[in-house]
Amino acid sequence: MCGIVGYIGPRTAGSMLIEGLKRLEYRGYDSAGVAMMDDNGGGLQTRKAKGKIAMLENALVASPLDGNVGIAHTRWATHGQPNECNAHPHTDCKGEIALVHNGIIENYSALRKKLQSEGHTFVSETDTEVLAHLIEAVYDDTLEDAVMDALRLVEGTYGIAVVSSKDPNKIVAARKGSPLLIGLGDGEYFVASDVAAILQHTRQVVYLDDGEMAVLTRDGYHVNDLNAVRIKKGVSRIDWDLDQIEKGGFDHFMLKEIFEQPQTIENTMRGRLVESEGFSKLGGLNLSKEELQHIDRVIITACGTSWHSALIGAMMIEEHARIPVSVEYASEFRYRNPIVTERTLCIVISQSGETADTLAAMREAKRRGAKTLGLVNVVGSTIAREDDGGIYLHAGPEIGVASTKAFTSQVVALALLTLKLGRLRDMSVVKGREVAQAMMKLPEQVQEILDRASEIEKIADEFDHATNFLYLGRGFNFPVALEGALKLKEISYIHAEGYPAAEMKHGPIALIDESMPVVFIAPHDSVFDKVVSNVQEVKARGGRVIAILSEEEPSLEGKVDFEFRIPKTIDMLYPVLAAIPLQLLAYYIANKRGLNVDQPRNLAKSVTVE
Ligand code: F6R
Image (tube, rainbow, N blue to C red):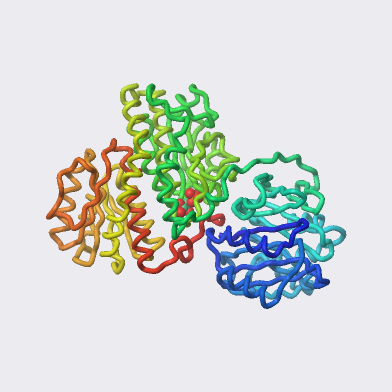
């Protein structure tokens, strides 16, 4: 999704802005641009390019900019084609104001008509351009006053950064519904939509909240609301390391993140699992024992991969804590009339903590009286700051667009929560210990699977020309089937579907022939025998079967085409282990097809628009 970075200070802004944009590439974009106050008397200048940041770099080589105040942007098209003209920054009629924007201006059409009738000339098809003209129209004294006046007329969402040659030593930034933070360097200041853009330069950040505006000068910064009332903000320290946002010898971030999972799972559990007592300590829940016992219904809401972990969490909680759980697509939740009471716990799962639909669903659940609990990876993200309590995943930055390590950490965090809720209810200490002991083994077991990644690579060799895939699983492994299919389709562009294995005979079986690979997730759990019958149904119709089995099962040789073994665990934790070979399979197939695994077409890392 769109990215913003800005710089003001003593250093040359250009290279820092480009480097910041490169750190944001992972979010997905289709064009990029930069605006700088040119020190050589050129005033405010912009350079833009369609396509990759390298194209913008070429534009800057052909026509260099020099200065130490600037803003830059990666655009993911919403209104108007991805082309140079629609790329940000956008400027006013005189080219004295330049602005970058994430979000959507909902009343842009009315504003544009009004501004056109007043004589403003528009050059792009974007909603963003109205903001530049609006600021021009109301400009009177300072840039910040004009931005405040303009934003009062705007409906929609925005994270913006603005510069102007009329007030040249300043960046004004404002936020409503689209993340933005200020980086505090040594005598220099940054603005960014994502901490990755500035991590190389500072770890001290100030997160802007909705309705806030920041004014950055060479001497300092301040934050106020849109009525110019100053707001005192706390400074947060980012503890991510730079090497966490670099590839560290791997060909792709996705592969690196798959291989990080023994460590990230460990990090999710660290200090939280009390093995001997079979329970978990979750400091951030902000719910007393009585409040936790008072809960009579759980709703889990999320999107995409996080929704898949929600399905697994629902089964865990119902089975072990005996609380009814429903799982809701965040995008649907607020458009119906869900049953929510003050005894409802709404669990919100989001890697980024910024997904617009998930955030809106959480706000709706809160409005209806539920307590909200965020399972979030990105510290300081909007969901993490607005929920009533939370469990941070501690999986470290996830840069690959396809979510991998966040998924396994989500499942582990849900298992921790299940222990907490279960042990406050029916779950015995013996059962609690069994779960805790199985959880402790996960990092080592994931490592064991990763050590055999080459086996999956060989299987991938057979299937990189497939055009369709079916993923089947039952019980806890049905959501894993959905997740395996999602991973494959998003990075390899092969059509893939996940189904509960037994559901196959109600329709998808019609698709099975020798060109249809079918992945069975069939560890030795309580439904294993049933899944073997489903395998036979596929083989009888000529389908090619890849089976993910657990180590204690007899071989299905003769019944399946490829077997991959995962270590033995308890039913509710098989999703953590079974997901790993499926992530690898998707990765190797996409890589063999020569695709850009880390930045698949049309996808964005965090979807901050509805
Ligand atoms: C799939 C993927 C997406 C996200 C979804 C929710 O690999 O990454 O489906 O899971 O956009 O994102 P978060 O978890 O950031 O709310």
